[in-house]
Amino acid sequence: MGLMSDREKIGNPGLALTFIFTMLAMLTWADYMGFFTGPVYLVKGLVELACYIPYLIGAVLFFLKGDTVNGTIYLIFATLFGGVGGFLDLAYAASELLEFEVCRQMAAIPYFWGALSMVPMIISVRKTASPVSILCYVCAASFLTLMLPAAFGIFSEPLNAVVAWLNLAVGITGMYTLISGLLAAGGCRPLPEGKPAAKTDSVLGKGEENYETGCGRQH
Image 1: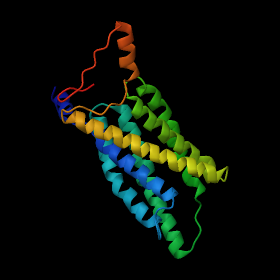
Image 2 (image 1 turned 45 degrees about the horizontal axis):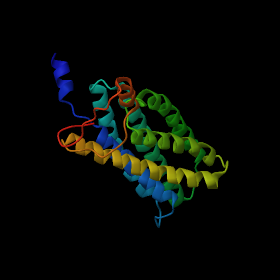
Image 3 (image 1 turned 90 degrees about the vertical axis):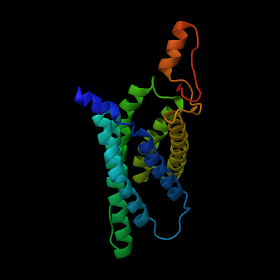
Image 4 (image 1 turned 120 degrees about the vertical axis):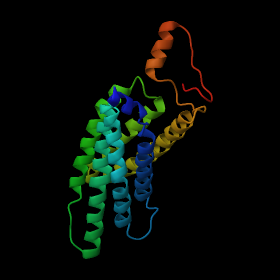
């Protein structure tokens, strides 16, 4: 009873983790688009490492809540975008400053493995997550997948352009769900995100619609 009571008091860390993920996606988009001047890898690596510990904390909180799916996915994200991404970008920065070569293709394998891990997650939440959230997940899995052939020189230029815009899509859709979730958590009307498939199935089965929104209610 005590353990269950403690779990019930733990808030949802998903919104904060969505902020981290979408912020890093926007950083990647801007990097791909060439918006930054001067050496980029050092600062980008430090930003990613700054997100590593919050990512880990959020993943652990999901596990404490008994949410294995989100806990696992965000632990993977912490490894990929905080740890692997951060340390590799610092290695790239050091290679530029000290003028030694490093292999950059190897980084594509962990990211592709991350894309594969997202497939069962997307399947498992497809009936409960909103269409906007599903779109965000699909875009994330897509850019992680396309980074593999691009890293090995297969249609690198067009694929890198697609990866860049997929990161932008992740950033926009993720921030949209973040704002909506914060509004709902604060007891206000969330932004329209579309009806989850499970709710749609339930409505079709009953032949009626019963969705309530507004301050104090969540849809």
